Image 1 (cartoon, rainbow, N blue to C red):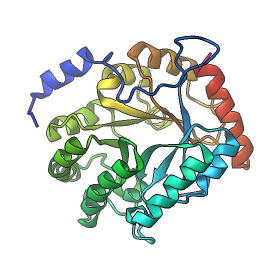
Image 2: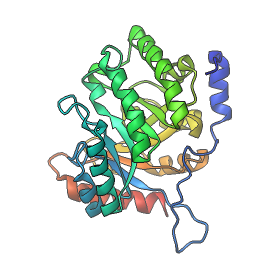
Image 3: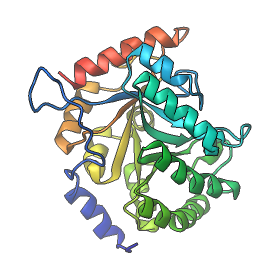
Image 4: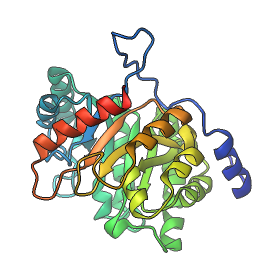
Length: 291
């Protein structure tokens, strides 16, 4: 793992903003030879099926291409670490035709990576699980108790732990993706501190908008060199009916060459039902992004 100066690191992030995508998914529109179609997925927790193989059945009914699946919870001891559970997920994926797009350790919001030693075991094990499940991205969540804002000691501990686990991720071709309230610059500082190309950013357009960041500048700054997957999200609204300008998101993603999963999170109106909301969210993204 190489060390870079902060100035050089930020400069390089701008130079490589148009670099190639993390994974070259071969989704095509058969009606248009040579075309690319964005794969559309959802978080298993957003459809009410956290770390549950029944999520694949529901995802198929919604019309999704894939799922972001949770390693588990503290209560079930991160049960996807068990080979039997892994086989249940793989069987459900095959039966439904719904891919496993990526993984997530959302429990880090409650059991923080920055302070709890057990979390390093979870990350190490999740790298192995991701390899079995055939996906390359693991979302590491830094919200609620895991929030890194105004927490230099917490950031330092996260950098220390990521330095320790990153070589394993590199060897196994897995990417550890930070999702947090931090700005693009702050994410780059952490990645610089770790010094591994297998630590990247999981970019959430709604979270960044909520923080007041210029998401279009940030996406161009990070590019596909540092963004490894995207949450398409709104808070309390359907996609396209809230604060995020998804037409500009589409144009920006095309500008930077992002050609990987679009993962729906949230985006259910207050008092609304998940299933019809996700039918509509999937339709909206498919029509907008794959026009």
